[in-house]
Length: 120
Image (cartoon, rainbow, N blue to C red; front, side):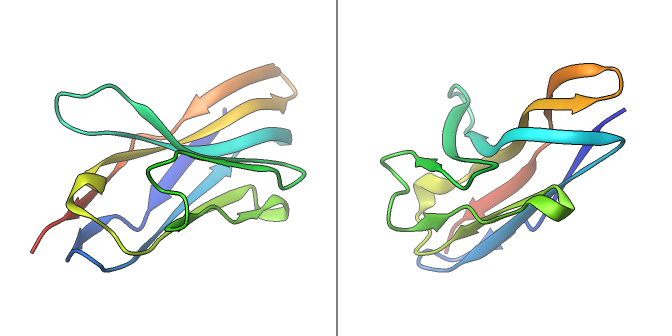
């Protein structure tokens, strides 16, 4: 089985920074894209950023210029570097691994989420 383990969430003041990590473990042959999504209370889950195995990235307009999404393919790990955080960035952040190929086939996986709270 494949598991995604997230870490790095917490409470930060407006203007501060946080770095989230997500490591995929299991008998993984390959992963297509990895990414981060977030869900604020009372709102739908939305895309934050994604990155393909080849390094192509996609960012939500609301985080462009503030967030980056590095990826370590050898470690099946993706990060989310969040700078200049705003109160509206407060949400549960979920990691996603798209088209993960193992000996049992290809599936998508989600992490349980990590809370990010931006408040003074």
